[in-house]
Every structure is written in C-alpha cells, then in structure tokens.
Amino acid sequence: MNDDIFIAIASFKDDELYTTVFDLVEKSDKPENLHFGIIHQYDNTDKKTSENSLDYLEKIFNVDIIKIPYEKSKGGCWARQRVQHLLKEQKYHLQIDSHTRMISGWDTMCKKVYNDLLKQSDKPIISFLPPSYFRNDKLGIDYEFHNINFLNKLNIPKVKFMSNEYWIDIVGYDNVKELKEHTQIPFLYGGFIFSSSEWVREIEQDPKHYYTGEEFALSIRSFTHGYDIYLPSKIMAWHRGNGENKPKHFTTLSDGKPEHQVAMKQLKKLIEGGDLGKYGLGEVRSLREYETFAHIDFENKKVNLNENIFKE
Image (cartoon, rainbow, N blue to C red):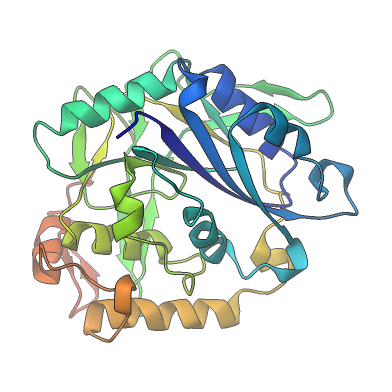
C-alpha cells in the first residue's frame, strides 16, 4: 500500500478552511502524499465561504470536495461520515477541524509515532485535544500558539461526570501535563485523530450522532474493535481558541435538541444493547473491559474519580 495520508475535514461555513488546507500542505515534509477529503457546507451570501471559494485548491492540490448548501446540512457527524466516503487507497487517515494549524513536519511526525506505537499495539490511534492558537481575522494573522516552546505539555482529558444519558463531560484545557512518552487513554478527541485508514473502514462515523456523546461513542466502538488510543508525547497541531462566533449547525439551523435526542438513543443502544448495525460494538473486546479500563460504571452512571487515570 502507498504511504499517502487521507485528510478528512468537515467545514460548516468556515472562512478558515482555505488557510487550513494551505497550512497542512506548507508544513508537511511530503505534500505530494497528501489527499484531502472535504465537505464544504457553503454559504453563497459570503464570498469567503461561497460554493466556489475552494475551486483553486482543487486545481493545485489533491482535493476531493463535496459541496452542499449549508441549509441542507444535518450536522457535524453526518458531514464527517460523508467525508469518510471519499477515502480511497491511502494508507493513513487524519481527521481534523477546519480551523487547525499544524507543526512543521507534522506528516513525518505522525507516521513515526504511529509506527512506533505498532510495537506495542496492533491497532493504535493517535488523538489529543490540540492547544489553542488565536487569529486576527481583519489582518489575517495567527498568533499566540499555546505551549509552542513546550511541545511536551499536552492537554490531558479529565472526566468530570457521566450524565443520565450516558454521555460524559470531558475537559482538557485546564489539565495540562508534561508527557515523556506516548500515553494510552480511553477517550479520543474528534479534532485530531490519526490512524490507519482501516479505522475509517471499521469505525465509520454514525451520522445519527450530533455533538454531545459523539467522541465517547467513537471511543467505545474503537476500543471494542481492538483499537488503542494514545496521546502523543508532543503537540502536533493547534485549534483556534477565539472562534466563539464561528457558525455552527446547532446555532445556525437548529437549537440542537431534536438531534441530541436522536444521538442519545444511539448512545443508549450502544451501551444497553440494541441493533446499530455497523455502528455497534466490536467483538475484539467487551463493553465490560472498556468500563474497567476507563474506570467508569455504566450501570450506576458514575465515573470513579478516585481511580480515574486522569485525576489531578
């Protein structure tokens, strides 16, 4: 198989998508090995996010784009699943958000970490919560990349509680620690997932998920299919921190409540049992094994904070 990377990006009226793609290319060691799959949920009332705003990218890079008017969007997970269908024969897969900045040589770094992890896991996944960068939109300038001079200081996921609907509240920005080695964790972050492309084929995104609980469901499904999730020992990317006003599906087209209820029904089936077809549990490990590893209790909807590996 080739050594190419499929980069999956779901964008909802994001005027930074163009810059994000250029950043990925310019900071890669082998841009010729990059293949982009993008769902462009466009807004023709804004030139920066219009239907044709990415046409130049298709001419100069390896880019496949699904174009959909933003009004027809069904949410982030639906969009990510659509993007996954653009995957071809690339060896590796990277999922990031549409407002992301990378470290120089990120492609070489990701491959090295992944292949190092193969020595201890048959099916590793690299995932972490990228620290923040900030951007002046008027000047078109990025600034204040958190911990850029301390790359081994990473955001560590910390579980606060489990809700009655089974979703867990995970925080990370306020829990930063120095890592000396890649560290196995039970939860992945949707804003940065690097893996073999086989992960996409086995763990296709459930389009009925919406926002809350999405990453938890993916983590459970990945674990039970035999995948191991790792924090890398160094920062590889940054996520925009001052994007509070960025358009989102649940603030633009819906209040999110109907979609959330559908997603919670999917999560309940995953945990309590139900026919989810290809979006269900794997057969390599049990749900009970996941509970033990993650120090959580589904029956009582509790997280054991005294034993949780992310305790302070």
